[in-house]
Length: 424
Ligand SMILES: Nc1ncnc2c1ncn2[C@@H]1O[C@H](COP(=O)(O)OP(=O)(O)O)[C@@H](O)[C@H]1O
Ligand SMILES: [Mg+2]
Image 1 (spheres, helix red, strand yellow):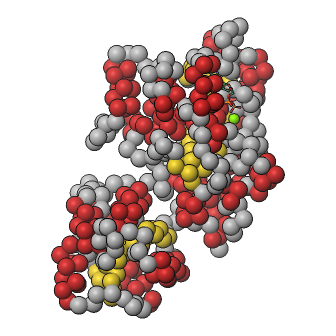
Image 2 (cartoon, rainbow, N blue to C red):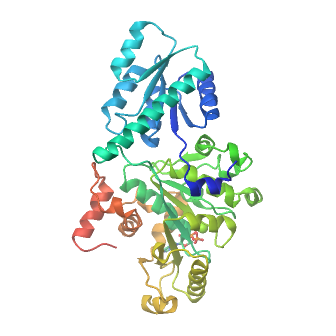
Image 3 (cartoon, helix red, strand yellow):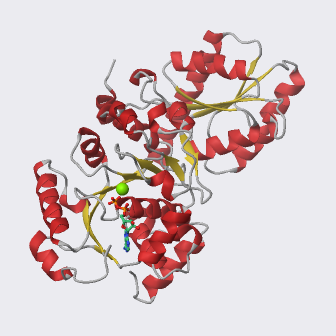
């Protein structure tokens, strides 16, 4: 068995299969067979949920029941075929109706194959593998012939917010970045609170603390899959998805670097953006995230202790071999006056300050007390443009340089500021 870290480095491709059925026992059985055959399986209990799981995960193959409440399997298949992203994804329908008429109906809707219930495990896996091989061969042939039409598989852009000194605004920024990225781009962002000493993220978002990563640290790593991760993710009204930290610090000892690497691996394939709030240290958990991060926001306040901590942090990043181009220094004015000027800080760090966040005590304190970050409920607050622009600037270059097919209001606001040369 590969250790998760190794599997990640080798980027082993395990096909993702979405199974949609309203009968729980069938879902379990099909999942079991497919997992046994080395596939990753995601499940959904009806057509509407199935459509969402497919759109969010770009699976390699879809297996759907036909008779389901709400949207049935035929309608689901037709919708998937209409969407360019899934127009060519293999679809197998799984149904108790073995009559010719339902087979024809399934094929007419756009299904590639048909398995009557009750089914034989060996036959089902064989049919799945045939379709996967065919799809892979078609994709290779397409690559030679024309530019790929299918969207790239997801690989979340990971943004780590870090500082050695606490109280400089890491959690505040991580929360607003998560909402900012969700507001900017078409899909929700995942925000993980990896702070092992009573994380603040859930509090800042006024989220119930029913599920946290402490509920998944006992699952053997080899069995830990995306459904386990999904089960502890809490949605925020903004659309942001949150992996909260337990308030009981005694539970935190069970979070280790291997678990965090596995969470990142699973989250990468399911989200487009992934923001993490980190402990104020260089613990194995912190280092695991920093190593994987695409962007590191090193946060400091304009006071001497903070500047010294930031200088030491930069030195340690260097020792760890973290690429300089992914490190961005953010100067956060957590206090109003008497701070060191930016130029002096840049000289002391021998590095430019990339972002400056102005002092906004009322906005942030109100936000914490109400559990409503400015970017969520106060887009007109003077601090919001700064946070919004920051979210845009740490987005992946490909997204920054492309106009979305359906631009969102936050994206339009950022573009307007960029056009008037007034980005924050
Ligand atoms: N730009 C800012 N202006 C005013 N207060 C801020 C600013 N950024 C953060 N704060 C406040 O600083 C305090 C510490 O922030 P927090 O995000 O908890 O820091 P950390 O996660 O680094 O410990 C909070 O009370 C927060 O409201
Ligand atoms: Mg914090």
